[in-house]
Length: 193
Image (tube, rainbow, N blue to C red):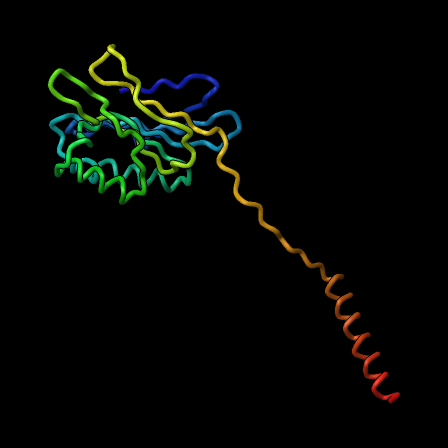
């Protein structure tokens, strides 16, 4: 398992989250930054076909929880050998995991097509789908797995502006003086009547 990071992207491995288990479930966690934009976290993951789906809860969830605590967008991509085009306990387990962790699965078409089957086993999930400009599958004959792709917005969507009202003590004193003056003036007028 590997990740190719091209320039001008800067990346470093999050060693405390990355690793391989005894069942060969593999995770490579990277923090990636583009120019001066806010960095994001990518996890490249591989789950062997004989690895039980409990690896999502036992291995991926603790790492993802730590990654989310960094308060950065998270993207998980890789071959989980769990066909999301079929309704079965494994795909339900992965879908529940994604829902529980507030991840959106972006790939919806088959990523592996053979003469006899079509499956979606290569995932691309994100914690911030609003930052994804587009995603999809690239049809190619290079491998029996089709590559998945994602284009991110380089800047997050603009938040609506908010107004900050600042009142200085001088302004407050002027208001008090003004109100006192009006009150005294009104009292003066009342006495004259």
